[in-house]
Image 1: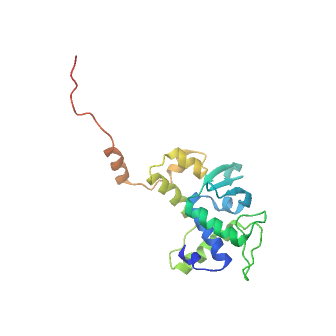
Image 2: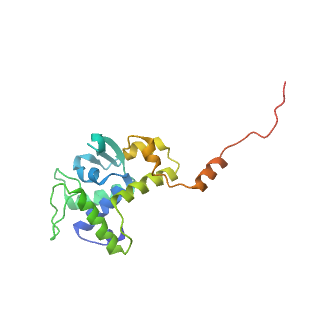
Image 3: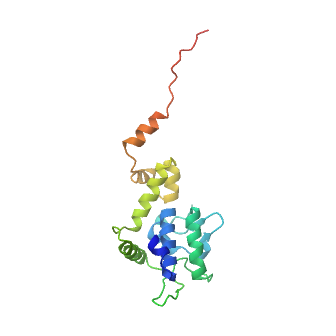
Length: 183
């Protein structure tokens, strides 16, 4: 993220928004590039995902930092109708048209290389999104709905919590230890 934020070009703003949306919403890259300007409502951090996997629509919500970075991108992009996230030409000119899903992968690889970190994919953000929500104690069905999974079993595959989480869960149980008087 720091590499994007330190890039003063429109591509830096766009790439920061891409990372923020992927990290904050768990969208698939095809869902990300299909977003239109009208699908983003800064007030409430709402993203309307239209025609997601299985041609299903859903509403997802962005955390405040992702809303802020997306709003910053929009000051560079302008308010013309069309794709929310757009290609940026070499000279810094924003082209109001939809990006290809493969472009998102290439952007992330480029930014990872610039940051000197191991390459990662858009799906890594999706896994992290689901796992972090589960780690935070959000119930499986809510995470399932946010991720757009048809089944909670699919969401459960993203659960990286180990034995410590199971142990902490059991420690929250209270077992009565005092005998009751029988009347």
